[in-house]
Image 1: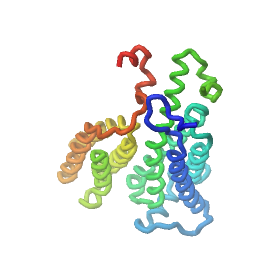
Image 2: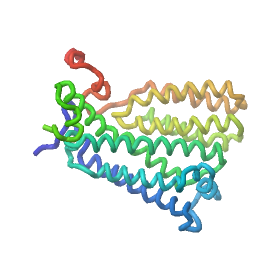
Image 3: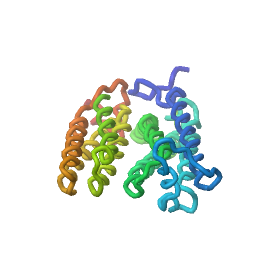
Image 4: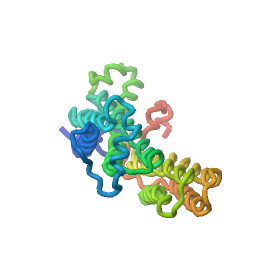
Length: 179
Length: 119
């Protein structure tokens, strides 16, 4: 069986070579956000901050970080875990056999980055401080968007073809009409 | 690719500029709101399939020029921000190389089969 390349494409966006780096990035983000969440929970007494002095401490105990009933980094860690899991699930032709998972993957990657950018804006504007690991986590989330979206596009094009040939969009979305 | 890298570098510079050039207040906050957005959208637009997002950096560049001259920026900050804005806006017009093919891209999702057949 050859590589399952979508019609009109020059490569397969669901190949392991495309997906594994993203899963790796998501796991790295999960480790960073998880570490920050544990610090916010008080598991670690100090936080690693090589550049901005008290910056990390101020950011990680700020009012914005306590808007939720749990530390904001915990939400980040959970999102990264969702990215890693939805990036790993499915075979290398999942753009047509599991469109639902690529769509969930795309939806999981987007908001994480949007929130990350928002938090990067708020750090200096509200608190005149920066947090190195928070910035690292934001960079990781932004790096994931571009490479993740090609698979989403391939799935949406597949669903569009099914729709145009008057076949069930619903069945195609759940991978019941892949051939 | 170089147009995206230039926009990213200028966005990073804009984030650092208030501290380096020594200004604060609304000018510093204005720069620090736009800078992460420029960097973020330029990074995402590095991906060929997301290249259309470079047009968002055009809007951000124009907005930066407008706020530099309406938010009461001190002169050095206004010159810096509008310079960054002009270059970022120009970079948005550079599409750059697209090496792969993507089945007609995002517009394939909305075009009808007749339109696709005509191409």
